[in-house]
Amino acid sequence: MRAAFFAAMTAGIFFSVSGCRENPEQPKAAASFPIRLITLDPGHFHAALVQKSGYPDIDTIVHVYSPGGQELKTHLSLIEKYNTRPAEPTKWEEKVYEGPDYLSRMFSERAGNVVVIAGNNHKKIGYIRAAVDSGLNVFSDKPMIIEPGDFSQLEAAFSAAKKNKVILYDIMTERYQITTILQRQFSLMPEVFGRLQKGSEKEPAVTKESVHHFFKYVSGKALTRPAWYFDVTQEGEGIVDVTTHLVDLIQWECFPDSILDYKNDVQMLSARRWPTVLTPSEFEKVTQLDKYPSVLTPYLKDTLLNVYANGEMNYTLKGVHARVSVTWNFQAPEGTGDTHYSVLRGTLANLVIRQGKEQQYKPVLSIEPLTVSAAYDSSLHKVIGELQVKYPGLSLAKTAKGWDLLIPDKYSLDHEATFAEVTKKYLGFVKAGALPVWEVPNMLTKYYTTVKALEMARKGSK
Image 1 (tube, rainbow, N blue to C red):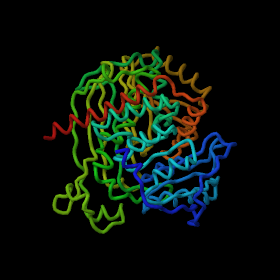
Image 2 (cartoon, one colour):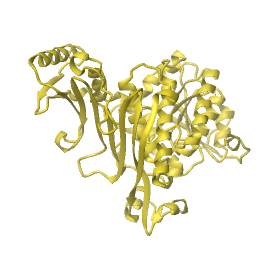
Image 3 (cartoon, helix red, strand yellow):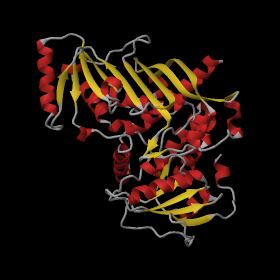
Image 4 (spheres, helix red, strand yellow):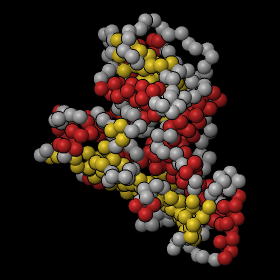
């Protein structure tokens, strides 16, 4: 795979975001900035969201290397939107090289030291391997791999990153949602939560469910998805895509700062997958294409497109039963959006995040004790008082099952805003030259879990 990337290719085009041709000579490094970004083949809007904010440690000149096409145009359009917005505009200057030899050109010029990768997931592990092998840091969108056969390549990539002293990291935005942060924090308070139960396959100790939509708005504009997004050999099935976030949260919340070993700590119990069915008009609405390309022929039944975007897995992590599921619909009802449901079952209380109609489609964390008592009430209110030092305005509202946590809006981030938070965290790792000791083994455990689930789900479907 990697050999093809470095094959001799014909000349391409080098231009700025405005489209003007530039001198293709090797760019000079900006010594005053410790971080200089390279965006490689941006095919997903997450690549642009990394740049929705500016950062004092990142050079405003960003070099983009791409084979060209609509995906590149969409990416540059989003960057331009951030640069020209009325409130807090960014100051990015995109230096774009477009051509079939984009990858070899990126390595010959070495215009930056951090490669941002968010696009076609089939290409991703090849891009990652090539970048870390050449001594470049990598900030990768999830998922890093989409097939069981790629897991050994991911192990090799982390080994190469360690050898070359670069930081390979995936973009786990969900860790920065305030409801998830507080769910984790309460689970570490024995006076409120007790201890995490072991659960069973029928009633897991941990449940994470996510509902997503193909048609949505990003930065106020209807998102156009590339046709390959609906080809699971390129995008990946749902059970290895969005589930990456959910598996990550289970590890991060239930075993904080602990080193996990995928060979001994993960046992996959069951997994299944099923398709989302799109009509020709729905496909046209989200892709702006009036017919299906030939690459999607294997997924057609008459005129309906069947995309294996949905999946569920049941497994144990260090003996704790967990269930993860993801569902993709075409479009959310008016006034709604993607939703998240999460349960941690403790010996004293359950910690539940809901995001449905009753919650006005905003995530709400509930604390639901197994037994109501004056002593428990006192312990909970004492904890809330302590948390108010860090989170002024935090309070409780009584419900039939316990309490809802009332969190002031200033602590809540939408999906797009979380990219700035995880980017700042990553920049700290790059400047320090190291990740926390648990991050790499736990990333490997996470991807082992998702591809193992896919492997089992495919066998079950046969």
